[in-house]
Length: 117
Length: 113
Image (cartoon, rainbow over all chains, first blue to last red; front, side, top):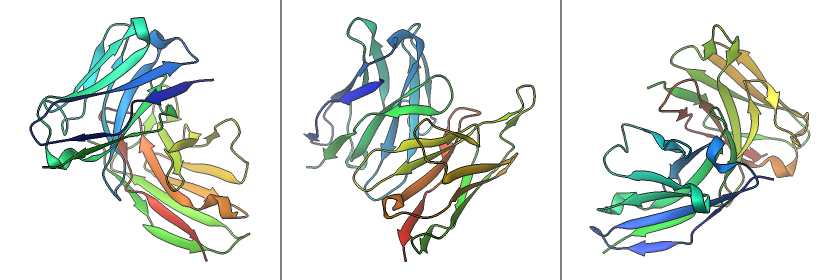
């Protein structure tokens, strides 16, 4: 059974950096895409980007390109989402998702990120 | 980007009745050579992450009751939930995965009348 376990909630200040994680299990990590989806408070789902761990092929939404970085470490079967300069508008729940190249087969439990001075 | 538009934004249905949610894409999601519609439906129950219900527009995910039916092709799609149960209270999203960035509809909130 595919499982995605995300790191815990974070509270940060504007301008700080952050890296959240998503530990995968139950499938061959290198052969599925892992993506990230943002859900701002009370709002819908936004596709941020996706990475193929085997060759690090990464696709970003233009809305998030340049503001976040996706990465994956095959040795620990973990994907990461990171910011170098957080803004208050980054406050949201972030879900990691796994895909065979099409729909999202499984979602992580979500990581709440709060950015406030 | 492909724009996904759902209707209605919310609806209230009595237990045991039908609910119908529509999703329209700004361009066709039918991949000609594969003859598949690149459209999925997700359900997000309160306080939980979303979960996939339907993919390829009409294929049910394993374990999803047959009360959930996806239909449509090209640019117009429908999720129909028959014999509504209390556990179906959720927000439902459609998603296109034909091109990146993949995009979601704005969501439809389903409540019990």
